[in-house]
Length: 208
Image (cartoon, rainbow, N blue to C red; front, side, top):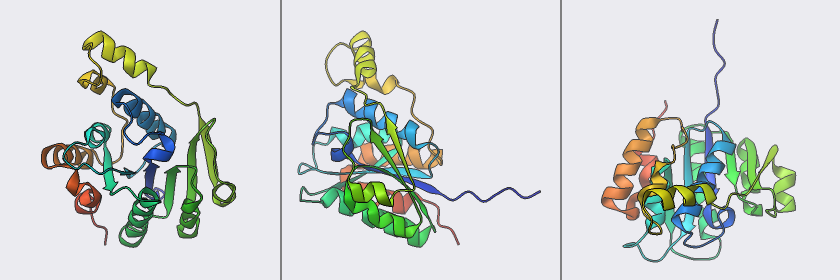
């Protein structure tokens, strides 16, 4: 009996659209990205696109790495985060044959992905989603918006000061390819965010 072939799914997180701040507090970032990972379900890998000008100081990248999410950081510009995520989607579509995309965003630009296969949208219950994106999506999942309260409580109990590593005690969401997560964490934290945009392409296994 042969098992069905499961299409690789990729989660694309439009960080500013789904988290709502250019530099979110660590506890809020961890709580919300973790909630998006849970809502998305099993994925081949997850990436987050966002803009940032200071490459020497980016706590967002290390927080994302703790959850197994690769950072695709770009210079701040209109639509820059959306464009880097779409470029990544095109690459994995061409190289991995990926035809299933989960998007954490309400931006209409992601309607393009419906032409590559299956498009799913994960959005907060109170988050505006563009009509064009709603029409193009095969599935829209609404999830309760989290404020980071649970992570904040852990932080206060374990460490006291704001934005310390207590929030790292949250169990990371399982993402397919544990080796990718481990190596991504080491690279992102050890050699900086400058390699984040190329991280997934370097680490993902090539398929023939």
